[in-house]
Each structure stands twice: as C-alpha cells, then as structure tokens.
Length: 302
Image 1 (cartoon, rainbow, N blue to C red):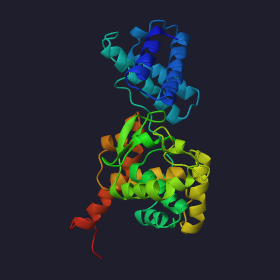
Image 2: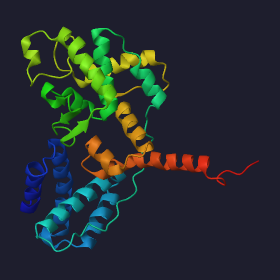
Image 3: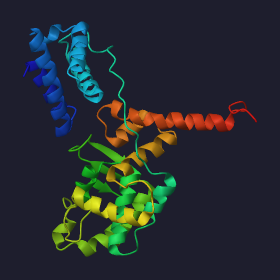
Image 4: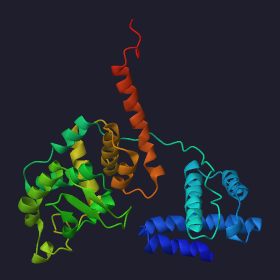
C-alpha cells in the first residue's frame, strides 16, 4: 500500500483514535482508489487532479456499485486528501468539490413516543424486570449501539455525574449523558437487581460487565435480542421490534425536538456526518407540520 495511505491509516488509529472497524473501512476504500490509479498508470498519488477523482467516480458507476458504496469511497478519498493537504503533501484537495451521487435510503423504522412509553412500561418489579427496564432506558436514553451496551463495564458508568463512557471499539469513543429516567433505572438495577445475578465477588470489579445475564456473565447481542423479542410479543406494537429500532427512535425523537445535526452525530458516535444526515428528513417533516399548524394561510379553508 502507498506510503501516504499508510501514514493516513496510522493517523486515524493513533491521533483520531478511530475504531478498528472504521480503519478497516478506510483500508478497503482507499485500496480500491489506489487500484484505480494503478489501472490508469497514475503512480504519483500527490499529483492526482480533480478529473482523476471524477474518473474514479465514473469507473465505480460502470461497475454498477451501489450508490452507498460509491458515496462512502468518495468520502474516504476526500478525507484522505484533506489529511494530505493538512500535512502539506498536496496544495489542493482534488476531491473537495466533487458531489457524491444521492443515496436512496430505505424508510427508517422507529417507534413513536407513545410506543416507547408502552415498551418501557412492560418490565415488572422482579430482578429481571428491573434489569430489563434499565437496559431499555439506557438504549433509548443514550442512543448507543447494542454492541457498545454489551461492552460496558462498571467503570464506564458515572451515576453521580450522569454519563457513560463508550470505549470506541464500535463507533466513536465518547462520553454520553444519561437522562434522569435512565439514571433512576440504573440505580435500581445496581442496588436491587444486579447483585442477584452475580455469582462471585469478581462481579463487582470495575472491569466486570455492567449488564449481566442470569449466569452473571456479560450479555451477547443475541441474548439482548431475545429479551427485546419477548417484550415485543407483549407490547401489542404493530412494528417489528429490533435493537436498531430503539436507536432510530432516539435519533428521530431528538431531531424532531430540535437537536442539531452535529450534536446528534456526536451522541450516535458517527465518524462521518453523512451517516447522521438520514435523520434530517424528520426535521423537514416537523417543520412542515409546524408551518401547517401555525401559519394563517398554510391550509386553505373549505
């Protein structure tokens, strides 16, 4: 691999503290870009011009790659050349002004606030119910990924200050605030529920898993899915309950209530803001709804 690309990957790992998954994605994208340059006989990566980037874009379209893949590879190339510009290896970013094709996204499935309230009301007062309530409150209250939740350790929770720390193995390393409902649910879980599942004193070590199953072990994604699925059967909600739908619900409700895109990106742990922009459609819907309700001439009287 090209020495400049290697330097960029080191920068991502060591300076930006990007996750392994993110770095691997850049490796794949920049390898495809490097292969394109080799095919065109362009051996000097510092001499690439805007027309070469356009050629890369057209080449991907000829290969019938998905719009999402083309957009991601172009974003990776643009980010690489921003690094090259910052390091004074090039004088312009040849990918800067090239627009990616519009991504056609599927409809986002999410729960309404009433449906979320119904789901959160289902766990009972048993140790299992108290634990499950805490899991749902944290998932919905923070928007973190399920993979991040199962990796949480006791040391990652700060109830006094009201936040959890995500370590960056999945998504971006960050500190995420806990709302009052999630804090209360976690206090109950730690004092009334978790001790009943712990089989040894080791479970109270700071490195021990925060959420544990009946065996006192850390959850798996599959284990959490089974819990949610069991509540889904009781919930009488028409939509299929998935772990991702709770994260979507967090994001949609935040954007509908005025959250800015940059803040939402940080909360969700997205490396690239383009991954967050999919939720903007719900802000547009909200604006139209407010406009229709408040402007005297928005809706014609019959």
